[in-house]
Image 1 (spheres, rainbow over the protein chains, first blue to last red):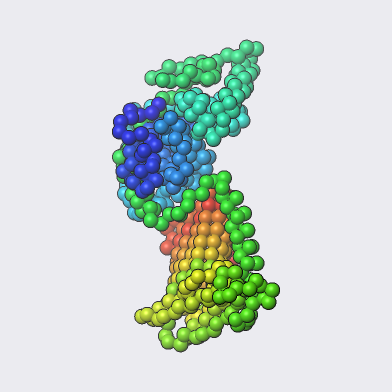
Image 2 (cartoon, each protein chain N blue to C red):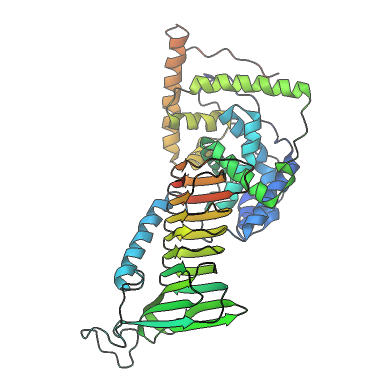
Length: 206
Length: 301
């Protein structure tokens, strides 16, 4: 999940960032931007929105850098927690970041980003549709159980990391996953008209 | 090591993750924003769950202040009691920090032409009222045990600088009631204490660490109000050009005259936003109202 880690660990970088070291913060961005971006996509089923939100997540993380939680020298679980809270109120988070951009008059605020090649756009659309279907499949789960699925299944955190991200105990994550699994099995089984739980048809990645 | 699928394949796999597009560009912008915010950000980041607790503590501090410093936080309630305190106070040889609480009011007028006011204070409320006058009338309410606060004032280049030193004293502070020319440019910086502004038409910058800010009958073009804890209320009789109101903990309410569209930036971390003024992203009139905890209301009456 995590990018190839070279150089100082997260704890060291965050401690430098907490003292105002912008370069350290830049390294943290390099290390985790992709994972945060991918997680945001799984929450929103929208690549563009995920891209817009990624910087907002890191800005929020910077503001709360005194509160960062490190799990086995990774701040990713905590960052995903920040991302989840921001995604719940994405329009506000984006506006705040855009306002900050506008205040300093940066280029991203005006210059449009280079257009993607058409096949990349199609690939994005395809994965967005698949993601939207997946989200619909877990839409009936209670919010807490959904969050556990999003972290442990899609973001591929282990249960301890998910617990850090959610700010709960590991046992709580375990039981939420367990309940989610039971509920999904019933739900999917009922929908397909079979008494036994049947998995959705698997699609191979292109 | 990829953890085992805890759902045992109930769900098909999610589309794979990707690298952030335009990574370097986002990185550059993010760091630019971070640099621009680095100087002006709050000193003590408050965990979200601490915010309501902080609000409660802030209220307690303010309430306690009203009783511990009678006549100070409350502003003009104090009366002349020169050099005397409650007879029941414990005796103190040199009027030290366990001496009686002394309250005293000092009046003065600055007659020379003043175009700006800078007021700095650590503990005590400030009330500033604009009117058709050319002088600044100062009423300072002092409260202290031990040595008295020392009021400092000087006029430099048309700017009146007002403040005070708190020598070795406890439970001490100074609150001000000022009557000023309406068009005066006003800067207020307080540690603890509420700020009241009335009928001013100049450029305003008022901040307090803890305490509410109320501005009524304002007709200036630019106003900046910030508080660490406490609500902000600002009412305008003329459409302002730029309003910046920020509270870390507490609601923010802005009321402007009808008939003008504003570029509005409103934000709360915990609470709701209600905007009823007409909005136009291209408007040269800007209202930026934000709070960490509390409601943000922007209305056109």
